[in-house]
Image 1 (tube, rainbow, N blue to C red):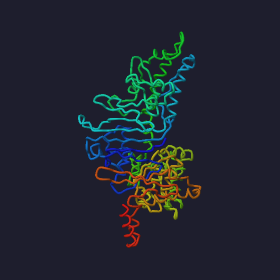
Image 2: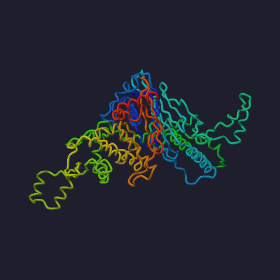
Image 3: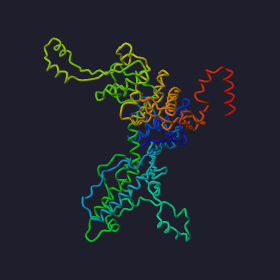
Image 4: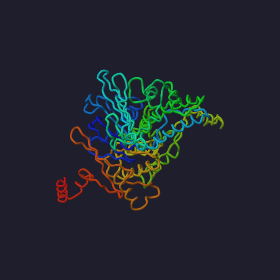
Amino acid sequence: MRITAIEIENFKGISKRVRVDLKPITLLFGANSAGKSTILHALLYMKDVLERRNLDAITTPVSGRALDLGGFRNFVHGQDLNRTVRIALSMDLTGGELPAMAPTYDLPSHLSPAAENRVEQFYRAQSDILDSIKSATVEIEVRWDQESRKPVAFAYTVGLNGLDLIRIERESEKLKVAKFDWCNPAVSRPPTDEERRCRSWDLAEERACTPEEQNEPVSSLPDILPRFYKKSSGLLGLKKNWLRKDQDPIPDLSVRETLNLPEADSDREQSLGSYKGFDSDYIEVAKMRAWEGTEFLARLIFGPGKLVQDWLQGLRYIGPLRARPPRKGIPSDELNDWSEGLAAWNALEDEGSSTDLIEQVSQWLAGKDRLNSGYQLARTHLAHVDADAFRNVVEGDIDRAQLLDLLKEAPKSTEIKLVETRSGLRLDPSDVGVGISQVLPIIVGAVVPGGSVVAIEQPELHIHPAMQVALGDLFIEGVAKRGMSFLIETHSEHLMLRLLRRIREKAESPLPSDLPDFSSDDISVLYVERSGAEQVEILSIEIDQSGKFVSRWPRGFFPERMHEALPKEIRERVESKTRSVE
């Protein structure tokens, strides 16, 4: 599964709906206040809505102190409470990647031939639908409720294979299915010849059907729809198990250990199967189809949301200003704060972290073909022994066995030092230049396991151009070796040039053995700009397989360099030609 796009509407500076196509490495360029950071913040808000139902978010656990959304009144576009905030994530996936939403029904080990045939038909129909799924989209909508004077979740929409499958809305005091496409491409099939013949005449209008009408797709869902006794809706099990009781259309995406279902319609199952005589297995098959049909619908409707939620759980947001860790240690309430970088230092200090992590980060910090910062990392394990007990050790009043027991029971901690490669001097992070505190969280965020996407604002801040260049290789490695994605808001020409160089080098010859392959298919370069007060435009800057820009940059690729470097007479000729083209 790979997230391929985010769409945003009425959130912060974005008014009309914009689509941002995502690749393993996505770079967001543009002028200040154009809307680049809004794209990252939309991910943070969607994560908080799905995980904590924090519709009125001011801060989020992931963004920490680095971001203050200010609540719905502030982040809805134009502070207009009549607008609805919409955020959608699209993904490429196979049906087999959709997560099971409940355990498999436990059928008896021995069934009659008729029952086995019905079970086989059921699972074959499920398999055919799953095999047809290629993509999915999940959209949430939040709007202001005037009566309760607070934001409410208004709608949850899931699309499969490019078209909406279902839309669940809040309506007054209840939920309604505003749309359900029984013939969505993922859950339908072409008609058989017999079905086409049956469609040759429209009895209601007393006319011949058109070829288009005869070839309309046939829904596969009736073959797997759960049937309940004296209940008309096959979606009833979804409402009972995954939709909340407070008219919230955004489902609880937890996997259920058991399902609360109405009585299965065993009479219908008996009429549909070839059951004979005293064969009572139809009762068990009816229960199985009610359970498995409900779970399968949940997989189609809520499974994509579960995948998005799980992906967002691995989101690491590194804000534009990373903090230096204090000399006396990181406060406990900030240990998981990636936004200001402190979680990176905590990951290095963590006793559970392997020495491989320290070595990898050190290599990136100090390697001559990497950041070449002049510093390595050293982790020291400390045991905090009572002063009197230590005095007894020194004076020989405690033997070796007692000493080992004392050390075993003593509180433990670790500390991270930066080692100057030239002198070997061990320094606290507070004792070195600010650039190290800015870049180290980015290295750790790209190396430490468990991350799905790393969203970074201005990774180039306070670091030398040579380091900015090397960050390109860090991101390439994170994509190839750890399956991460990077969403980066930046102004760094140097970072862009390194990525273009790696694309070009792959086209000309194999990359160095220690670098993974990287091509133009792995990168999305987007230019964000404002078009009037109400609209943000996202321009995709295409790159060919030789690492050259195919699309023109708005006003040129970092034109400031040309403006400062060229002689005045040449600069004026170039600018005149550019104006005439525009």
